Image (cartoon, rainbow, N blue to C red; front, side):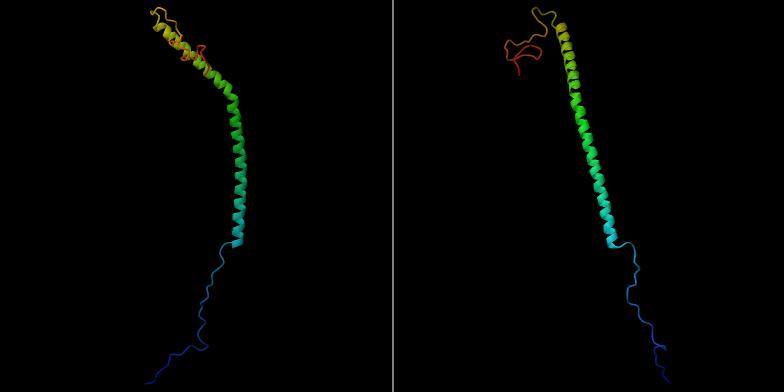
Length: 123
């Protein structure tokens, strides 16, 4: 019996491919860094514009409130006067049978206690 030895093919085996052959995918690091920088710069620019607009709206709101203060005080005075007049009318109706009762007059004989409607001492 004759033995046959297993030998390489004529011309030898082809080279073993051991290197990574990955294709380049996507932009490079500098392009990404430039894009992020541009995006952040644009965002800060828009933030600055928004801050300016917000500050202007706050100033406008403040001035509107300042100009409304006299109107609101007059409305409060009007409401207080109407409330006092209603209270005086109710007091007059309730105490009409009491002799010597003066509606609206303070029930205290001391100048320390007074209502805002009377000419008492200042606070």
